[in-house]
Amino acid sequence: MTPREAGPVADAPEEAFTGGGPSARLLVEVDGVPMSALLREAPDPRAVVLALHGGATTSLYYDAPNRPRLSLLRAGAALGFTVLALDRPGYGASAPYAVELNSAARRVDLAFTAVERMLESRPRGAGVFLMAHSSGCELAVRMAGDERGADLLGLELAGTGRHRHERAMRLWEEWRGREREARDGLRDILWGPSHFYPDDLVGGAAVSASAPSYEGVESEAWPHDLPGFASRIPAPVHYSLGDHEMWWRSGPPALEDIASLFTASPRVAVHEQADGGHNLSLGYSAPAYHLEVLSFVEECVLARENAGAKKAD
Image (tube, rainbow, N blue to C red; front, side, top):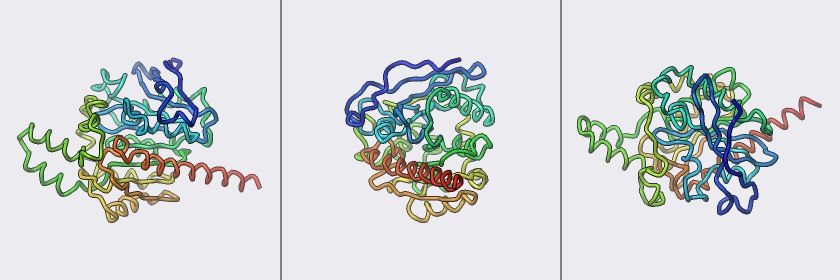
């Protein structure tokens, strides 16, 4: 099935944040499952950034409605990167098939195949850089450690960790059996401090979606599984947390703890985003965060170009 798209993609840098039409929506079918994405192309890209959203949202996390300055897609295209924000298996067009996607291996296959079909006729520059947020990091590390991900330019993980924040753990115990309090408290943790975000985005209603059931299982296993996944990733890694992250432990010790897990990576960089909460791509500091990540992508492109030139010599 050929990717279908609707709507032009503005590529003029001066219109990157304030003008241009909507990002293109793509749809492909993989083994009977429709897979969707948002795309914004650079005419001659340095690389492709493949972005995987977190839980209870969609690809709109990276291209929030009516908030162009916060858009990773617009920022990336303005700086010469094509950005493909994939709706993870169980989200977007594949949401009606979520009950069939409990197998992690199948989700990885769906993602790899969908991306290949969406990019097959498009220039990729130096290659594909994988970026993920929160629950999306589970799929990202599986892809980056798979043999099909061996040629990735690099990997960005954000809004995740190995140890949950003490406040989150304490309140979670207090809320046990009280669903409403748990829901309201979780909102405060994931969307705090609220003044870090535009009022219309606090709580995530503008970009929300129902989470597939498999995410609950993966969430419980994640702290135990992450070290094993991380040790198999051969690509450069960039890891980010907001300085006000309240779901995972934050601060320099937490950053260094995660960095130490990527023992097969040739380079690991960590970043603490000032004035950042859990949802880094939706807060007022999103432009700064996106520029930080895109700078790392550019460094990965240069490293690959230099390695190719050295090999040619």
